[in-house]
Amino acid sequence: MITVDEHRERILAAARLLEPVTAPVEAALGRVLREPVRSAVDLPLFDNSAMDGFAVHHADVATASPDSPVTLEVVADLPAGTSLNPSIDRGQAARIMTGAPFPTEADTVVPFEDTAGGLADSLERVTVVTAPRSLGMHIRPRGEECRAGDEILPAGLVLGGRQLASAAAAGVTDVVVSRVPRVAVISTGDELRPPGAPLEYGQIPESNSALLDGLCRENGAEVVLRTQVTDDGDGLRIALTEASALGADVVITSGGVSAGAYEVVRNVAPMQFEKVAMQPGKPQGFGDGEPLLFGLPGNPVSVAVSFEVFVRPALLAMQGATVLDRLILPMRVLEPWRTPTGRRQYRPVVVTREGVRPASSGGSHLAASLGRADAYAIVPTHVDAVAAGDLVDVMLIS
Ligand SMILES: Nc1nc2c(c(=O)[nH]1)N[C@H]1C(S)=C(S)[C@@H](COP(=O)(O)OP(=O)(O)OC[C@H]3O[C@@H](n4cnc5c(N)ncnc54)[C@H](O)[C@@H]3O)O[C@H]1N2
Ligand code: MOO
Image 1 (cartoon, rainbow, N blue to C red):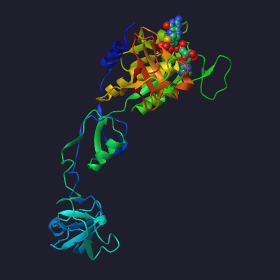
Image 2 (image 1 turned 180 degrees about the vertical axis):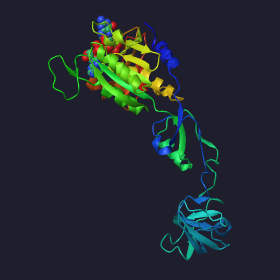
Image 3 (image 1 turned 90 degrees about the vertical axis):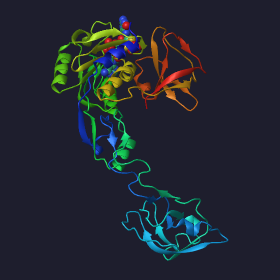
Image 4 (image 1 turned 45 degrees about the vertical axis):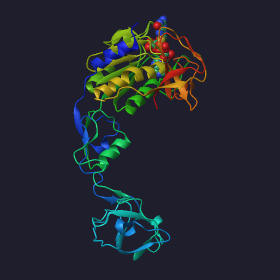
């Protein structure tokens, strides 16, 4: 048996970096940045108001109070989007809305709430009843966040909605990201029928390809082939050839890798087969050629865990991601369970505010309960049981 870390290192050492490509920001969701994003502009682009109210001279209103209000003449109205920069003398003000360019001749914003009339009578004169706390209040200065040319997103980041918004706000239209990895998903087993097909005794619906297709796409990969083959070997040979012809960077098979009589992947695929000290996911195949070949065990929970522990880090490494691992946090165990010694356990769990509880009774064949899990509790090799109240490491997967 080899350790999880040994197997993972072998995989990561074989994961080749895909080429960078330029993509429009709108098409970059889920992709990995290969060059930092630099702002095209100063942010904010110009001094602007943080509040709806009035642009004033601070010296005019520094002593304003309910007992000693100050009335100013309103000489302009500045909505967001205006290109006006009116001159504002002492004793004057401009009505201004949030986001509107702040006039160069004023120095402070008084919000509507600090005036006697509020919004209602605000276009001719304004009576300030509360002095601003300081000069420059409620002005968002140009360049406060960054200057044109500053790095706003580092290379290696996976682009989500927040990151795409940062790039768009910074006037960036194109980003340099990794080419999307192409994956082929091949399910093996004579017992498998496409979901929805009538089942004879001994047959089951094929579900691993739905699992792997979803997990790959959730992690920035494109699934170029999704197929199911029988255990005789010819189907797998043809599927592997097809995967290469489609330019797959990665092929993931499930099933046919353990110790039985009909282990088609073991018999046909050019992989090295190992027993890895983990549960589930003990029998693993891996081929370090081109494409990379992952021979995952057939049990659905084993497939899901093997994907997280081996395939996902490889897909991210190929794309140049900086962070390959999920967040792992210690959490309280709410219900006890047993775990085999000598293998690191990845137990599907449901996370609540109080802690974690097992998502199923524990077998790696329990496919239906997998959908309830939102994390894997990781129990070290030497431990044979976890008790309620224990702290356990939990890998968050959703
Ligand atoms: N004598 C031994 N038997 C087994 C060992 C062992 O060490 N010695 N290891 C066990 C472990 S652990 C695992 S995990 C499984 C892995 O077996 P295979 O990778 O050969 O997978 P299969 O036998 O083909 O399938 C296992 C199980 O999963 C179901 N399955 C397979 N593919 C799908 C699919 N696409 N969708 C839904 N379900 C699928 C299949 O019907 C089996 O029930 O071996 C143990 N045995
Ligand atoms: O290792 Mo198997 O994946 O336990 O069920």
